[in-house]
Image 1 (cartoon, rainbow, N blue to C red):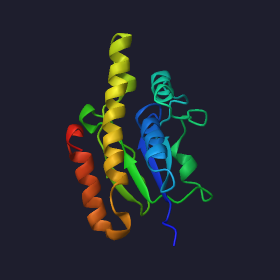
Image 2: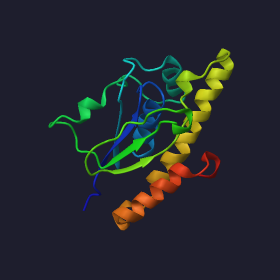
Image 3: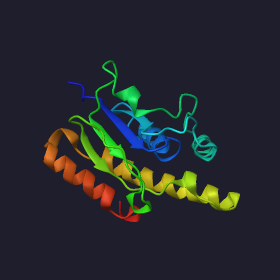
Image 4: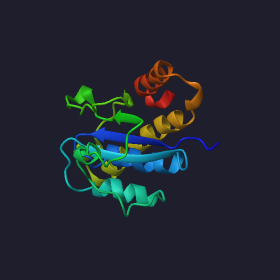
Length: 169
């Protein structure tokens, strides 16, 4: 019997960088097992050009990426989410969106590279670092034996992935 394909939504405020990066990373790492989506509670309306450039440089398809509202995923015809991850940095005072319903959810605090102020080379390096943090967390997520875990065990694993220092994931 074929394994269930899980719908995963990454949420942040602007849906211009972190959630877009996470969507792209999971689309590649979880191909065939996961369908990745991203959205924002207050979308900027455009994907950050540094995020797009980095994804293109790393061979991710970018043609369908866009900054969108989470309202698109609250409509009756929208896919039902199995997992929802918030990727906001509460330490920076961001308000993370809360997703209603029953998906398994977790918070992965990540700095917003779109707000980084600095020279071009440092900005690119900051985006690469956030990409690396997301890639490690997504890698840990896709390696979980989902079918063998009950909801509480799964949430516990996801919380540990989010709380762990990105170097340790």
